[in-house]
Amino acid sequence: MLTFACKLEELAEGRSKRVDVQGNKVAVVKIGDDIYAIGDTCSHQNYSLSEGMVLTDDLEIECPKHGSTFDLLSGQPRSLPATKAVPVYEVSIENGNVMVDIDVDNIVS
Image 1 (cartoon, rainbow, N blue to C red):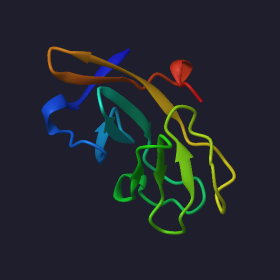
Image 2 (cartoon, helix red, strand yellow; image 1 turned 30 degrees about the vertical axis):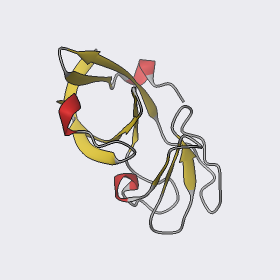
Image 3 (tube, rainbow, N blue to C red; image 1 turned 135 degrees about the vertical axis):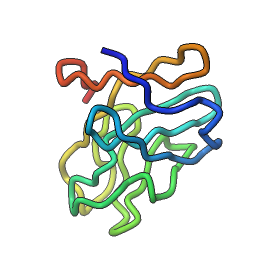
Image 4 (cartoon, one colour; image 1 turned 90 degrees about the vertical axis):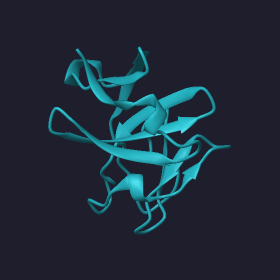
């Protein structure tokens, strides 16, 4: 089920915004015309990914704690020390609203 995450206009290019969707911490990222939603908690040390750098050319987000990067499309870690994926969610834009499908059965990763 799609749930409101934030207004599209709240997202800055190449940055992430932490939102809570149905009690889940989600980092929403805007790169060009594309919007990505990824679990906001690093699988290595329980740190907020939305506080890290977005690597726009690689479609990755970096954990600011130890530098692990995660693929925005799959949630898979692309660098150590993280070795476990984080969830990635389907996103839809409806009337200027970013909607995220947080349903466990529809997690992309």
